[in-house]
Amino acid sequence: MPVTVGLQNAGSFQVSGWPYLKQVELTSEEQEFKFNFVTSQITIWNAGGEDLKFYFTSGANNVFILPQGKKVTLNIKTGSVFAL
Image (cartoon, rainbow, N blue to C red; front, side):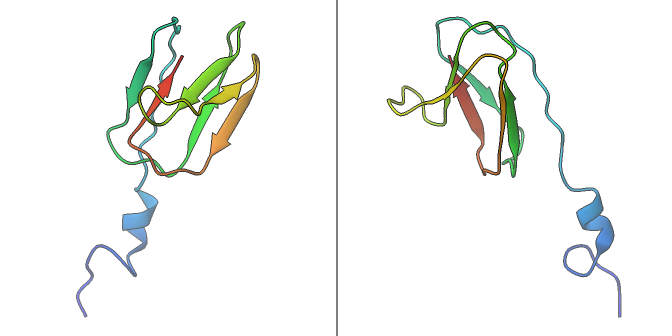
């Protein structure tokens, strides 16, 4: 039986996943962070001096607020995240 990529091929799963790291200084304007691929997990860390608002749809009224000095890891499939 020939070996192919996909199911039953450990190498396909060992190399999956592309790290993405970006450090920015946010302003009062909405910024979008686009990923090259759909995520399976993201970690957002607020290292600033004010609360961080992030969300997944541009101009959203429902936002997540991350207090200063905190970080959160989300198991979520998304192509981008917006922040203020």
